[in-house]
Length: 84
Image (cartoon, rainbow, N blue to C red):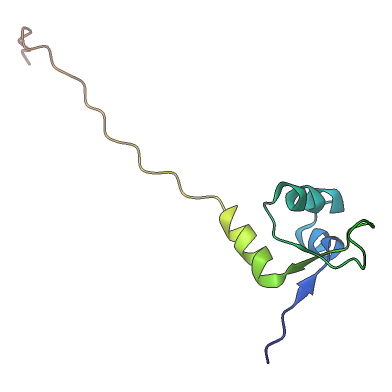
């Protein structure tokens, strides 16, 4: 049997050095997968996030290296003769 590490929004916020409300926004937008473990669905939500879901979320938000810029060469006017 494997155990899954579950994190609360305050734990995630503390780990990432951000506010709890930012984590709540990510959950509300559906960007971060979370499970509501509240006893009743109409009560205040008690969110829990799997460690793997948090890692996947952070991987998706990781910055990517920009693609290399193409080399642009000046067009030469075929009617101009250059002398050096």
